[in-house]
Length: 99
Length: 374
Image 1 (tube, chains in turn blue, purple):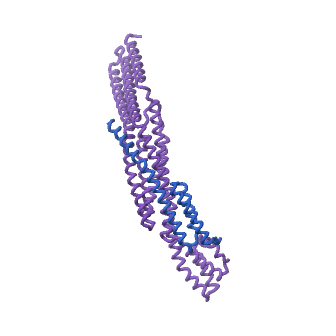
Image 2: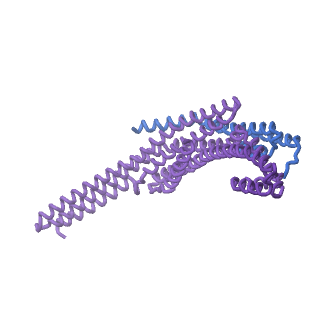
Image 3: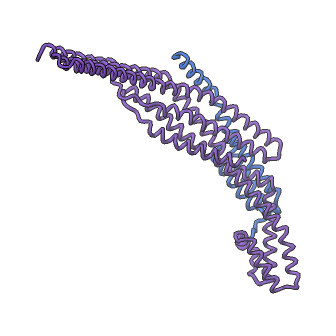
């Protein structure tokens, strides 16, 4: 079907999606990020090529969400590193005592 | 009953009591579990976890190579470095777990070796007694004395075997008791790590695909290809009366799916036959040149994107497999600790099965990634 949305409609839709993406990023909501990425990908596929600036903004938002996924995961991993180091040292102590 | 046979029977009763007492004092041990699969699975799990971290770091680097703004590149490189740094801490934890699981396996294998030696000595002594008994021939009481001695050797061997087994069970119990809490907590941290890696890679295929499409101008090229296809369709319909549905995506998609070379050949033939002297053929050919190069460019982007998406998806599979393997490992250790405490046998079949699947996944993905990187 030919696209009958105006450029204003497209811009309004993008605005909505960007707010959704911001909420997911600020709230560190992994499921929210996944939904925002899917919705923005769909937007990127459908937005007419004449509205390239809108496409570029949506595309950048997808990349940012992907980076947020990775940064959030790394923070979660790092948060338990000290605990792991202590447990590893204790396990090593047991091994040395026994040997 | 002669005095000699009575003496032998008394010996037999005394030894049976000794076996019973030893058995009771040391605790009934059941059969010692073969812990080699447990030690091997720890090593397999270490590899899978290391590869999971590497997959996350590689995905961040792949993405960094596709984006153009400095801030994103900086953040992605920092993330990749971070995953690599955290992986080295996990390697140390796994080295401690591997040393521990090797120690458990070696307690059992040492006991098995000692038991094997006891069996060897028993067989040798029994053979010697048999030879001595045969040499004594018909001397009164020689055969009974020989049988009595064999019985004595068997009972001593049995006590030794029981003792070795009980000592190994005690050592296992001690080692597991000391480490149980730490092993559980380390496994919990590692499970949380893998859950985080799953989050890191959850949307990676979509994000990497988007980065590649943006960088290579997929949208603009696809749009241009669609326009050229529409022009081809217009020319064809004008020339040979094909239905003119160029504004409908279905029609364009149908052209895409068809054998392009055969389709173009058929169109050109039709144009030559129906409009040999018209400008249609020239216009058609004029349209075909850019169409081919644009279509090739779009196909190249599609192929590059498909390879990158497969790499990200392989990382996801690896993380999911490592998480399943870790869960099986953790529950096998808990079961083992329980079994040793309760002096019951333990089965590592489900752990072995989970680790076999993990190894297969790992080998398959490793082969795939090596192929893709070439």
